[in-house]
Image (tube, rainbow, N blue to C red):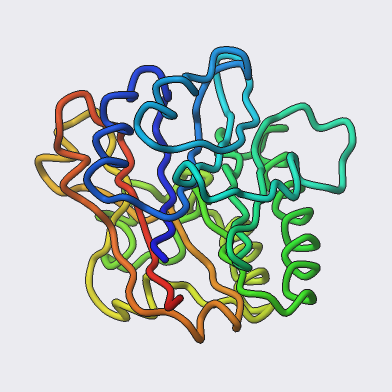
Length: 260
């Protein structure tokens, strides 16, 4: 089972890239972030024509998440929205189950600028995620908690092209990293680092300053595996070449392969 996370940076703007990816890679499950459209504007007809269906939790202009699977493989939608704050209007979390595997797709708040209510919201959201992640672990099922976490785990070049350049960013603050580690240390496995313990593995390259051409990227798209999913891990990686295609997202698809 190939499970993918892909921040599209606008599903309508990247629809050709999404359809291309579905056709070429044929994932069993794919969670999308930053679809940036209201529910009624989600291009489900085009996606169905490409052989996929699913569920989505949209928001006009920004945010928005979705989970897709091949037509004929019914996905059980478990949740839309992260529990813990009924007043939170951001579309940032969706959860579904296919063939006994649970996928939680998330788009964690960016948090910039540091020191503002946006950073406080990021940390509060991560605390809610920590609580929900613990509940998922308690089910003792194969769970993949995947998406754009907007956290660079370390200062090492394996995770970021330049720690100095990103030092003041919310993605690298001690509080963000501590919250990420707290979740990880509940018992989750970082699939990319399990597969590639050493070496630069980036998932995001900014559109500016020739970041893609210079390989000035960093790792913010993470796939965390419950122990039951980690036991089935066959491979993991980043489909980096899709970042270099015409009118691509600034993120590359990131994936895990689990034994059936």
